[in-house]
Length: 113
Image: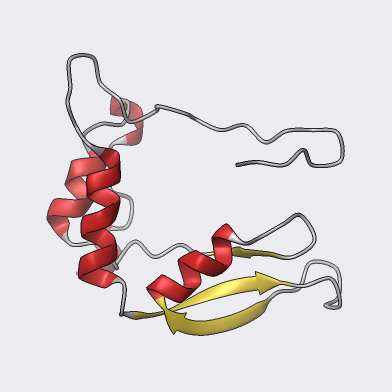
């Protein structure tokens, strides 16, 4: 659920991973990631109003806690998380192959070598 941000709404690519005649279950994919990696410690950025403009606090927590914090976020207090190495190859490829061809390249592959 997105709240309006200062009169503007963010662009959301809803259904971007859906392919015609495909029965892929995105919710099941999320559950598998949650079950497989939910207890893994990750770092995420947390923005609070009392921090200087453009600054965020780095927080270490299990993935479950990080995602729960992100879901609680608001415009004033928000968190971001991105970790290309968290997902196993089968989890990555399941999502990448559903993207438009121009977006399918795994730009982080060289970093994992």
